[in-house]
Image (cartoon, rainbow over all chains, first blue to last red; front, side, top):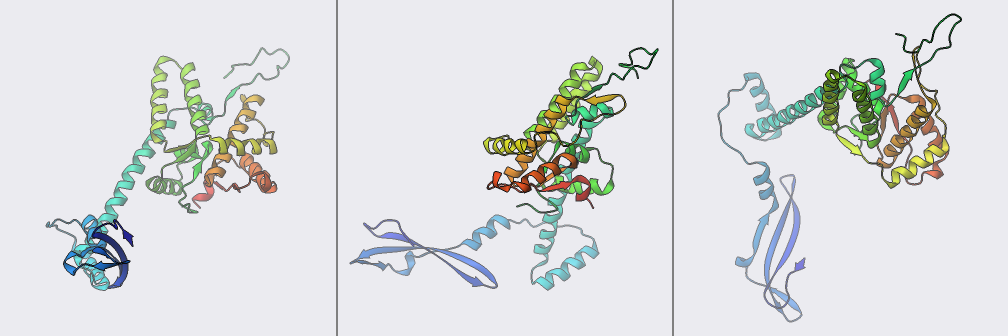
Length: 156
Length: 180
């Protein structure tokens, strides 16, 4: 607990968690208190502020908009079965699946763009040039001359 | 959080190219999924090696080809995700690695017409040491296509853990192994 001020009636912040419908719910209370002797007197309940963190999480992550979609019957049937099994509504299941699919699509677009860049970075070079791009600098060798032969440097 | 299949990983220069150029459908599938989840992490040394490569090609190319090289360089820089710097910790670990295995464990690259000079090979080896150190300091598995060099570093680190307090071991994974 944190006391914000001890000089006059103050707010004490209290946090506690509890299990609610199988999930952990965190409550944050701001309790108005006043100093009394060596302790504190909790003022009457109208000054107690209740804030459920879960509400805020849901607000952030579950902002929704009603719309009408035409979906494949098979997918819809499957989504309904999953929704019944998980005790969730159909919108939640379809929303989850859609989020996963869109994230995957975004990843694919990103990887395709990088793949294209990599392909372009190494296209159109000879094997020796590719060695150079790998940090291996090779040069043409001067082979030992056989009797009666000229210098073979640069010979293709 | 590092996952054995999804990382995030540090890609060595050789591994980045391997994935960028592979036609193996399994590798492409993994690479595509990986890119969807993570930015590609590379060492600043990889950027140095690549940009030096593009710059050298550009300097020796005619004007018509320079355009292609420049657009490839820009495409590469656009695809780069996260570049890990060479900071003090990385320099310290790299110094220990290069003292343990001072000479490149594999010979210079050569084919019938071209060869890598000894000094270039030594420079590349030192770059590999810095890349391995970067992975160790970041606590990331290093994806590579260069077992000759990196396995030598891993062995050295494993035999001398007292020289690497608080970091290591060097975790390695070959490009091919990740898609099996």
